Amino acid sequence: MNSPAAASQLLLHGPILRTLTRLAVPNVLAMVLTVLVGVAETYYVGRLGTTPLAAMALVFPLAMLTQMMSAGAMGGGVSSAVSRALGAGQVERAASLARHAVAIGLAAGLVYTAVFLLLGPTFYRWLGGRGDVLQQASTYSVVLFSGALMVWLSNTLASVLRGTGNMRVPSLTIVLAAVLQMALGGVLSLGAGPIPSFGMVGVAVGHLVATTAMVLVLGWFLASGRARVQLRWAGWRLEKALLADILRVGALSCLSPVMSVLTVLIFTGLVAHAGVQPLAGYAIGQRLEFLLVPIAFGIGVASVPMVGMAIGAGDVARARRVAWTAGAVSALNLALIGATVALWPDLWARLFTADEEVLGHARQYLRTVGPAFPLFGLGLTLYFASQGAGRVLGPVLAALLRLVLVAGIGAWLAGQGATPAAYFALVAGAMVAYGLATA
Image 1 (cartoon, helix red, strand yellow):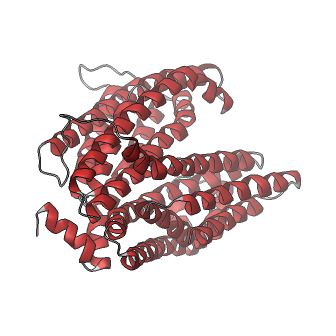
Image 2 (cartoon, rainbow, N blue to C red):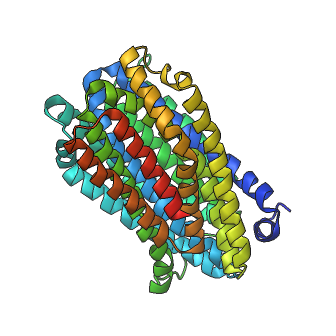
């Protein structure tokens, strides 16, 4: 049962909950470790001073967008196309789709690098960067986004493997790369022994080296013949139909993370008008949301090959059962977390501050938004399941609805001089609307 063909049969005919759990656990663990990388790098940069920390905050949303677009959006399109081909028994088509996916990753990575090398300082200026903060953000950005090609390639190769139902190799590679990134980031940014401190640039170099290593490992595995599909380039040519099969899901999916980042940026700006303490309280709650996403992501990505193979095999009923099972598992996990922080908010909030005024706002945020976590998880997981089916317009429109609600009602609340409690209720309401609309 360890052969690639046997694994595909398990995805097509095995018990849904047990198979989904087996696939999801490695993903969730890998995603949690990537969150810890962010925490470690924030700690390193915090040791360098307030200005570097502020500079990193300007670059962070756009760096997250790189990961969300390459792994969750376009990556979902890649996994969907590969899994649907395998479900239909078209192994050669799946292998050709893998090669087309690499071509898309190369093109997207180069475009992404060019955009941020040319326009990065402009973006950071729009976000409020000035003086030394803007200069350090721009310097950090040049090194970080010069490696955008590696980020796109690593996530593309991982998505090809996930499309075959292989979650262990991508997850293990991500874990090892994360450990390498944390180690290099700490040494190169802060210095150690004879190695001098390179500041924020050291953090970016650590990221670049670790991501490049990930590309080499995943590329070797796919070329070695150990995977269900093999990357062979002899005689390969670009086919519009295969590009379209990936892009009709992946390109449309890319709109969703863009809208998610815009939603966060708009809401952050709205809460900032209410004062420093409410903003700090919101930031504490938002950090918890960043930990929720890997759970929903890990479960959702696990559902993509199961849904895709079922669709490819013509078993639509099973595909629907997989999607709803994944959504329910995600909603249940996030409901437990939401209930815990709603009832005992200090378990989370006191990890970050002892300021009673900030704690008051953080408690209010967690008690208001915590009950909406399960619907947020449901929506995000069903978004990935929809990628597996090759139909993502509905979930993308649901993300647009969330953005419109936050922007429209948020602007009205700002005009009314609303309290922070009203803004927090808006976040909860937008999460509920997103989950219900996706469902």
